[in-house]
Length: 314
Image 1 (cartoon, rainbow, N blue to C red):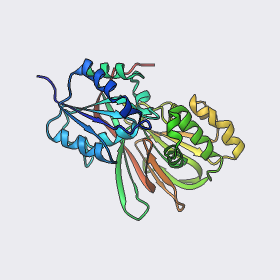
Image 2: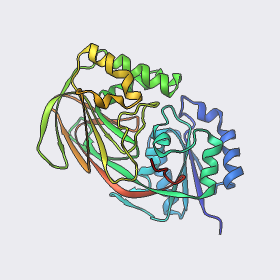
Image 3: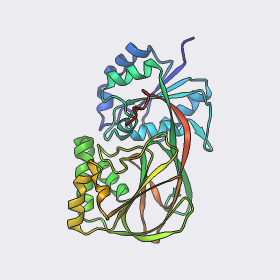
C-alpha cells in the first residue's frame, strides 16, 4: 500500500528562493516518491507546526519539510504533544532549501535537492534525538520549543537578528559569517550562570552558550564538532568572555572545529543544561529567535525517525 505523504513548503525560505524553485522541487520529488497526498504552502510563522500536526492526526505516514532549519524545526514541533510523538509510525523527510542548512549537514544528507528526494524515496531511516527548550518570553511567561540541530544563548540570538535584517540574501556561508563577525565586534560579555545535568552552578562572563544536537550550523560553523544526532546527549560549548583581538583570532577556527584547543572555549556533554542571567540575554534555536533566559534545555533521545542514509562510522 502506498504511504500517505504530506508536503510542507515554505516559499519564503532562502530569502524567497524556495518559492522560485518550487516547480523543480515538486518535479524531483515526483520522480523519486510520486505525488504527495496533501500540500501546504506556509505563509506565516507556526503554520508548518499546525499543518504537520493536522496531517499526522489525519493518518499521514510521512511528512516532508521543504525549507531551512527553521521550517524543519516548526514541522518537528507538529510531530509531538507534551514531549511525546502523536503517532510513532510517522516519519520525517527533509528537502533543504534554506539559508544555513546546518541540520542537513549534521545529518549527512547530500547537498542537492535531487539526491535528497532520492533518499526520501529509498525509504531508509535513522532514529534521531530531538532537543527541548523551556525559556522565557521576556514578559514573565514560559514557552517550550523543540529543536533539531542547535540552540544558543547570547551572541547567537543577535546573529539571527542580523541575518534576518538583510544578510540572508548573501546565503548561508557569507550571511551567517559576516553577521557573526559584525556582531562579535560589539557584543558584550554577558554574565550567566550555568548548570549541566543539575550539577554545581558555574557563573562567569560569556559571549554565548551553545547546546547542540548536530555538529554543523550557521552556514558551516563547527561549533560542536563532536556532536552526533543519535547519541542521546547534548554537546555544550561555553564561549568565554574575550577581548576584541581574541574574538578576531578565534573566529575563523569555528569553521574547522579547531577553536576547541583554545582556553577561551570549554566543551561538555550532558543530557540537560540550565541557564540563568540577571542581564537580558536572548535565546535562539535552529536560527529562529525564541525569547530570553532563563531557560532549561534537555535532550529527548531516539525521539524521531527521519529519512536518511545510515550514519557512516569514523
